[in-house]
Image (tube, rainbow, N blue to C red; front, side, top):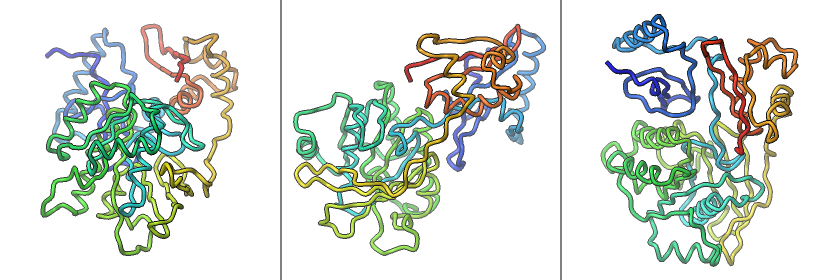
Length: 385
């Protein structure tokens, strides 16, 4: 057997879990860059034998992958990438609302801002390519809508499609094809979910709802992008606001976040969006629509965005690595001495393993902690983020 050592890091994304999971499994896995394992030196015969032993263990049909708390702290996990800070992150999101209340104009607005990198209301945007499946429209209607909103200010990074295959019957491959051609893709919008689902006896069961969002979530997690799915709400009122979303609780149970758009009456220019998600604070957006351009403007938010207080350890790292000194490499002990935070080397590396996502998101500094012949080496690299 020939072993490609470059393929020993993998992430299997479980659509039923609320958190990112790191799984060392050679069968039925989806490789991503979310997790990096610190393997022993591969040139050692003893360590190669240990790798073979672990592979034999995992080949056992009764093998159960577990991670100890110590291993958990020793593994750096990247946080979900922000698409729109405080609003959209990597993963699968549902935007639900009654028909004809302005959902398509809203997602077109989101798409345009991400494709151009222009700030959306008070939210910072991470620019990238956007694919918008406008499956209830034709190109003439899309053209008229975008011209009404933005005039001749176009975007070469925003792509539209008016037809697509069904989920599980060709759509997956179409998405892969687009991603392979546009590696900087940040957002895929599917408007609406009903257009990509197979119709059958189990169309609205909990299992089928969970599966359709789960497949899109799996794709989003694999490529570190956001998939925003437009859906409808029920006509009848519900005890919980989000129970108004048409279908079963399987949709919400699997999605990483949901945005519920509501109006008091269809002709009103005001709307609210309730936002809930695993990676952001719950909030309510109060919007007002410009009747001439149909663009939604933010009036206010009910919940102020949570800002974490400065982290003295991360601040110390930011002083050590910057645009003037873009890289630092050394042992954990040397790092502890250089940062002078009072933390022991072992505790410091565990702390940075946990905080590496925030270190990258807020300070633009990547963190690596690897075992080498000479011992463990830490590398800090300043990026443009």
